[in-house]
Every structure is written in structure tokens, then in C-alpha cells.
Length: 475
Ligand code: DGT
Ligand code: CA
Ligand code: CA
Image (cartoon, rainbow, N blue to C red; front, side):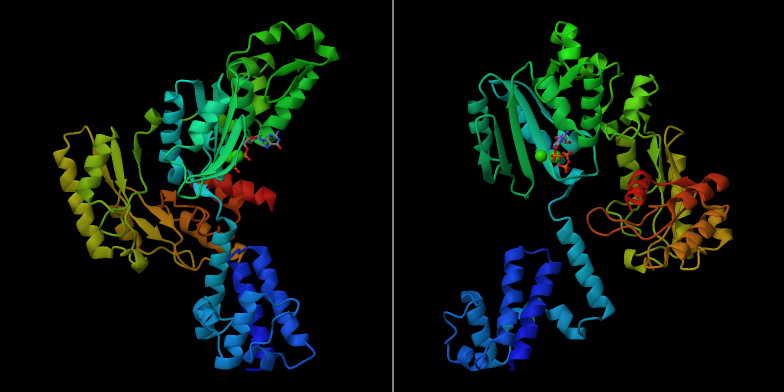
């Protein structure tokens, strides 16, 4: 093996580590090792073979062993293993690039969690904190309380007169894997699934202010603080302090017992955490025109559901029973269509059989509950649909979704989707951006154009809109 070959392997390892989001020091060690191997004045491969690399600057112990292996065996097992996917077809191959891109995407989001992945843990720790004899109030704040789809960490807040005791008991909880830092009034720890949990302990008087501050968002806080200043109050996580201009307010601000009082003191209606993103909620609260949030009891049924006929986990009957147990009034069944073969999509014959099964089952429900027969029909590359109109007309509704050829240019993808929703049988557009939370990025699509087309054709759009628009604005 020549020194160029060896340097090349070290550089490739550095690239793979980079894509994987590894520790930058490690990456740099491989890169500078490659440089040394290329430029060293003596016969570095001979030195490596003879185990005489000690003392050469830029070549640490780990690299020394690897160079010895390469010089003596002509290969490096560590790299063969790591680079398997890359080696089979060589760099530049589309598949390998895709794999590496998805590794990089995952690495980029490695410290994020879907809210459902941390929900049970958060409530479990919260219950434990609330049961603590020295704790009077406890909440989970941050992005979790704002109901974001993904969170970086869990921010717990308690009010107590014995912060040190509560912190000590918190870090000793069985739900905690590792303590990162521990102080007199706060601690940061890791739970076994890798999610970081922060705890802050404050007094009862500070609690509403800390709750408001640590719920965020940061952008919401900035505007709240400015609004307070405009009224002669300085606002932070501990309380209101009158500025010179607000000296006359010192009595009024004694009466703050919960978050509502903070908003009231600033001339605002109470803003639900889910709305605190500085996206117009403060103006709306000032004018008394905040929207009412959807409550669980507003949910009467759902439409985008799969059964074991395609890639769902429950049978049709199990799904119907679960929906009735949840108190829903109806359930739409929309299994995949035939082009989604990876999801065991239904062909015409299987779909017709399912429609008949649904009609028969509905006869059992004596009017209190109803199944709707639908399909999640693939939008093909050109915007046509996976089933012809005759079959679509037999369905109660139709969800149209993109499941393949994600890499179209934006204009083509937009045209493709608009063509699909212009079909009068299409009731809803499924997952408009194609993203999988923390797994797959959104495809390129012109969301405002899709919204216009959907409004024109009376097509419902499934979720994701807020995230998609936010991304579009950021871009
Ligand atoms: P995350 O953890 O990235 O999912 O999102 P958050 O919102 O939970 O962020 P985190 O945990 O860093 O902080 C919790 C809250 O604390 C945040 O929503 C607002 C507040 N906060 C944190 N840092 C700052 C800051 O620099 N300025 C202001 N005004 N508020 C902050
Ligand atoms: Ca957080
Ligand atoms: Ca935090």
C-alpha cells in the first residue's frame, strides 16, 4: 500500500465520520493524520511496517496502529467495515450518496426527540416531582409544554422551599441515567433514552414567572419583556421589577399568582403555550381575538388510517373497535394503493373486497358509529392516480399522497400534486411535504401554490402546513 492509498483511506474515514456527525476532534485527527502521511519526509510506510512511528507529530496511538495494519496487510479492517456501503459501489454512486445523506440527516437531528418518544417519561418524572413532600408546584416547560412535534430536552420546574433536597432527590431518581451538572437550584441529567432533562427549583413567588420564562418560546419571551418595559416593568424569570417609569406599579405587581396574572398585567388575554411562538399571538391577545384551541373532545373521527391489509398494525375490526373505545363517531380506512408495494398496497380487487367488508360491518353498528371506505392513493410521477376514476367513485373518500420519486424539482413536484388534487375524487392531500419527523427531510414543493389549488378545488390538506410554511419562510 502506498502512502497515497493510506492517506486516501484516512481522508475517507474522516468524511464518513463527518457525515455521521462524529466528534470534531476525532475527524480532525484523521484529516491531519492523512496530511502527515502524504507529506512526511522519510519512508513513512516502511516506518509504519516496522512499528517506528512513535514520536511523529500528528500521528496518535490509534492512527499508528491503523497505519501499521495498512502497511503490513495492505488493508484496514476498521475502514472495510465502516465503508462497506461506500466500497461496494464506490463513492458517487447515487445509492451510497443517499445513504450517506440520510446518515447525515439523522446525525444532524441526533439530539432531538419526537414528543411521543418522551411523553411517558416526562409525565412519569412530573408525577414523581409532584409527589415529593417538599415540592408545591411542578410543570414541564419548554417546547414540550408548547406541544412541539419535536423537542431537544425536557425542562422541569418546581417550586419549593428546599431546593437542594429536591435537586438531590431528582438526580437520584431511577429514571435518570447520568448526571451532567448539579447545583443548588438546578440540575441537568440524561435519561436512559438519551434525552436531557433539566430541573430548576424556584420559590412559590417566582414560580409563575419562571414557568412563563422557561415555557418560552425565546421569541415570545423577547416580545413579552419589551411589552413589560413599555409599561415601566422589567420582566425576567424571577418577577416584575418596576423601572423608574413604573415606580407607581410596585403594589399592583404583588398580586401575581399564576401565568394568567402576568398576561393580565401586560394587558393581554391568557395565551395558551401552544401559541407562544411570536407569530401574531401577542397582538391577538391584546385585541381579544385569540383563537380557541382544538380540544380532544372536538375530535370526532380520523381519516388517514391503515390496517393490516397494507402496513397497519391492527385489523379492520380491531381498528373499528379501538375507535369506538376512544369514543369516536366515525373512522375512515385508507390503506395504501398498489404502487406502494413496499407497504403491501391493495390492488383493485383487494380494495373492492375491503369496501364490501366495510359496508357489511357498518350494518352491525346500528347508526352510532360508522366506518368510511377510503384509500390512500399514490400520486404517480406525472400526477395521475394509482386507481382509475371508476374505482375512486366507489369510495366514500380518497386521500392522495406522494410516496416515491421524492427528488423532483420543485416546479415539477408542485405540478404533480396540483394535478392530483384537481381530480374531483380526491378529498384530501396526504402529508403535504413528505417529511418523516427526524428521519426524512421534506421534498421540494411550493406550499402556497398547493394551498391555492386546494382552496380552489375544495381539497383538505393533511397537517404539516405550519412546519412547511415555517421552513419556507426560513429559506
Ligand atoms: P428545545 O429544547 O430546543 O426543544 O426548545 P425550548 O423552547 O424548550 O428551548 P430551551 O430548552 O433551550 O429553553 C427553554 C425556554 O427557556 C425557552 O423556550 C425560552 C427560555 N429561554 C432559553 N434561553 C433563552 C434566552 O436566551 N432568551 C430568552 N428570552 N429566553 C430563553
Ligand atoms: Ca427544552
Ligand atoms: Ca433546556
